[in-house]
Image (cartoon, rainbow over all chains, first blue to last red; front, side, top):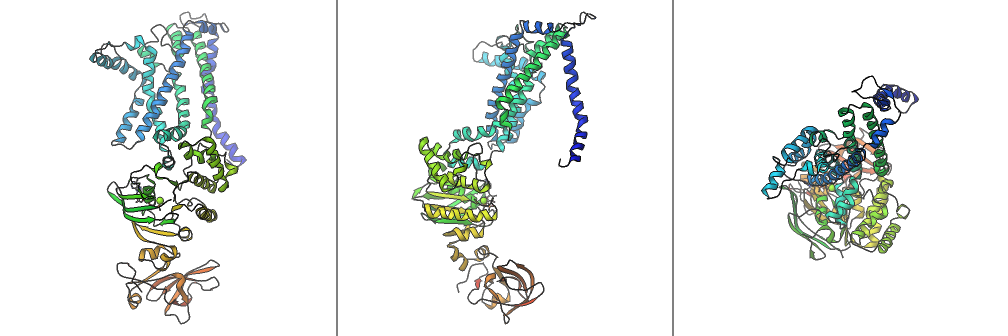
Length: 290
Length: 333
Ligand SMILES: Nc1ncnc2c1ncn2[C@@H]1O[C@H](COP(=O)(O)OP(=O)(O)OP(=O)(O)O)[C@@H](O)[C@H]1O
Ligand SMILES: [Mg+2]
């Protein structure tokens, strides 16, 4: 990229892709904003009219809105904590030289390849089901009352399912980072009198901060839009106990056929995602700088 | 104090024997250099002494105490690694203070020691920088600083200068020698650089395939190598080895003569033709194809004007021939 000519050429070559990506983003966003300003209900065709911010007003005053917001943040935070802590622990374990390391690694990665709806069904019907589930069987075996997870702790159950799906991703990224940790540094710290725990705290954790940042940023993007797991297991209930913003938007536009209100919810979700993103970049983005 | 005694130390990795019975005594305050070809087990031996690897067999005693099973931190040794092994997210100050902090020393005393070490090593202006903001030589000095603040009974260096350029290597070499003069602490230094070994060592240990070939002062090894391997390894350019009729004439299987001990003499017994000639200014290295003996490397004065294809007569300086038997051992004169 040294000469003027090559710079111009590179801009020209890139521009179709940039234009396409921009349209790809701006058209749906523009349409959603447009719909969110309309009264637009599929049950009443032909009555579309401009209503300003009325949809937003209804969305914000919906009794499910605040619970949904809190649930969304709880879900994201809960899954992040579990996957980062669990991912670091698993990565450290998998980094030890053990027999059958290759197979163990594949086993750990496996959940990532299972479709969200399928894994949610497996958890719902085979593990957490209060009658047929494995956990219920274990509880009965121990003489305890089986727990109906999705009735008693719906959001926590969903957090567990989603965390189970994302743990492999976090483990994989952190394991790769761990493997690039210089062995001689570890040896030096050992000679300097640092035991295993202090080596972990003073060397491993600082070395992993960048990878943890990547895990947090990427997962946050995907976790804000978790949907299939909720639909398959609790359907947002009981009540609003496991309704997230994404699910609320779905309920309003698909179940109540109110496209206008759903679009307003979508825009609110986009704004929330941006607030979270800015917040995250402020907080941990500096870790990504070299 | 810093006396280290190895008795029949062995190490195998997965059944492959890497260190095959090392007996060695390192006296307090000595500067010992391990040399040997790549892969001969120098680093492994150093790591065994440091305690970073477990011995398969044998005893390592430090200051008269059996330290074979002691963890590295309790052996009282400090190591400087080839890659420096600085902690990248800590400032220079924190790097140097790390061993003190691990030992639970009060912060004020830590500071005092770090400042003192930084002063000795000319690191004071860089104390608040990160390792990534330092040059190679400065990083190496930080690694040395981290070693000296612990006041170890011995320092272990594993090829500490091999990542530096030639000029810096010379000055760091001298700094380490000076450090040894002022601290008078035992130092064990691994290198495969001839010049480092010859200039720094009180005692050189020549290793080959996990065994000690010879131990001695630099000049002992140069003048009276115990066998072919040491004769070929110590000295640069390498000693010439002559076999066949010429060697038999001297009652040896192999005859060795160093390039600097061959003179160009009009009446010399060895007649040949100059191949490559390397003019270095101070010296000229000639590759001479001698009739019936093969190529000989000759070190001639810088002023010698000989070029490809010139005929030349050579003579070995009297008393500078090394004789070896068929097994490669030196025959006594
Ligand atoms: N952890 C290990 N597992 C198996 N083999 C090893 C291990 N560490 C070293 N070796 C083997 O031991 C031999 C000696 O290695 P070492 O690193 O001590 O050589 P070295 O003399 O330091 O060589 P260099 O001059 O290249 O640094 C090598 O053949 C190496 O492959
Ligand atoms: Mg080595």
